[in-house]
Amino acid sequence: MSETGTRFRSTKDLPSAHLLGTGTPMCAGCGGLQALHQIYDVLGEKTVFLNAAGCMTLLSVYPFTPFRGSWLYTAMASAPAGAQGVRDALDILLEQGRIPSREDLRVVVLTGDGAAYGMGLSATSGAIERGLDFLYIVYDNEGYGNTGQQYSGATPHTALTATSRWGAGFRGDKKDLFDIWVAHRPAYAATVIGAEPLDLARKVEKAMSIRGPKLILALAPCPTGWDFDPERTVDIGRLAVRTGVWPLKELVDGEVVHTKDPRERKPVEDYLRLQGRFSHLFEPERNQAELASLQARVDAYWAGVVR
Ligand SMILES: Cc1ncc(C[n+]2csc(CCOP(=O)(O)OP(=O)(O)O)c2C)c(N)n1
Ligand code: SF4
Ligand SMILES: [Mg+2]
Image (cartoon, rainbow, N blue to C red; front, side):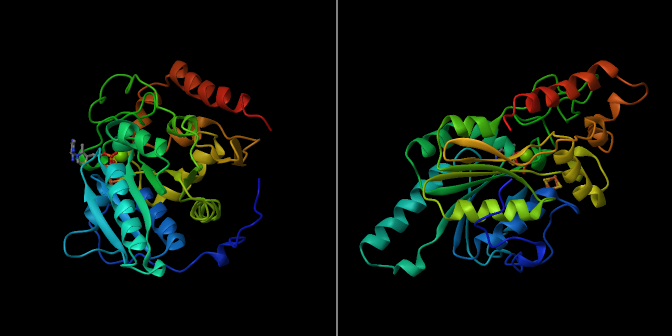
């Protein structure tokens, strides 16, 4: 675990809020909004967001926005293409001397998992391939939240969703978006969660210091889609890390490094039990086979981690 080279050594070092807290139409306890607040506090106001349609789109209702910087809304698959256009436009304005360098902006995609793991993947792949200088933030609530939590490419095995509501739940497996990015050899990639704010702030700060395509992938506990009490968002986020379900890691010089290593992991069912989307694994009777298979997936991941 590396805490060096950062101004974030304790929670006292975390910056004060840039995102205005005016009444947004978001759900109470939204883990995506929690992560976004923290990310924006580090990024600062000289930022232009390209937002793929999803829950966070509700933050800005023209002409109002809780952000102090710029915000563009795009179709679900198009945010990386929009980011290319904005970066190119800024570069032309800079080159022609029509804006001074102090007015340059960071180009940031803000997308849900439905777009990031599915609809927007080809546009994202192309942007990374072109070496676009942008930050790609995913808040991963493991489903199409804004339209009622249908399953997405990020939905975990057995989760109940609007489109896998019966029987044993979702039969597929969550894609590994971090590894899909790593396979593209980006400038930087990291997983984060709002429940671990120091780890998050350090990674965003590192991403800001590097040119090229950069991923910040945030697991986003979603009280509405995952069916839990909004006051448990931080508990669930911490359990995602301590059970090993959500590994915190980053790509450094071509190597994947784990930034929090839960050597004494809690049982995965401690995480599952708090969420209604997994309630069928416990009631009316315990589904030992599925619980064991979910634990085995996490164990297999950590067995392959080089320490
Ligand atoms: C091409 C296209 N299909 C469907 C929609 C409708 N739509 C708007 S938001 C959304 C859900 C997006 O899911 P995700 O990217 O995970 O973001 P979340 O809603 O979970 O924040 C959908 C399906 C759309 N805007 N564009
Ligand atoms: S549905 Fe989930 S991700 Fe969307 S605003 Fe509500 S809590 Fe946040
Ligand atoms: Mg989603």
